[in-house]
Length: 177
Image 1 (cartoon, rainbow, N blue to C red):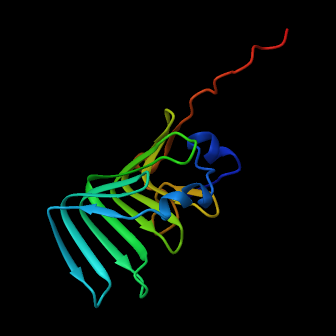
Image 2 (tube, rainbow, N blue to C red; image 1 turned 90 degrees about the vertical axis):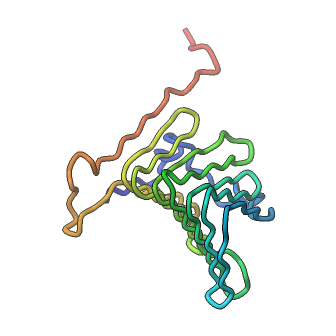
Image 3 (cartoon, rainbow, N blue to C red; image 1 turned 135 degrees about the vertical axis):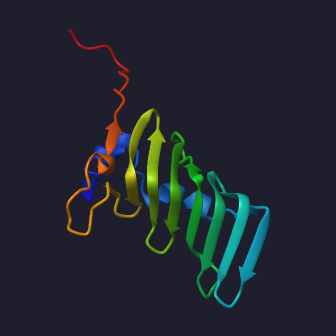
């Protein structure tokens, strides 16, 4: 697995240098869930939603064919797993451009403050893209891990490579003569 620390690269690529505080306003909003069916299990603190699932919270929108939502003992969301063809995740940070992402599976790990895109993972903001088989973003540490490692630590070939597209920055001032 390749590790890309956000020493400006993640911020340059997708604006991923956003701290957890950027999304704080969304976390304080109610969660709205729409689905064709739902199974709620209070004993295991698990809810499974199926059929065109749409979850919104503030500017965040998560979609999938099947979404499993886990809560902790106090009822706070601890983990959301969305599966789809593809599952999608979109969020607009305060004062920023929307971040669009997709993957066959999207995991949001609230306790770890991490979003993971698995299989055909794709992330885009302002025309800048990041794609591969696996993309994980640690919101608190501002670290992106991407790629997919085999059990021996090597890569499996071309299909496991990541691709990053960086748009040129727009100049706001004319160059000095």
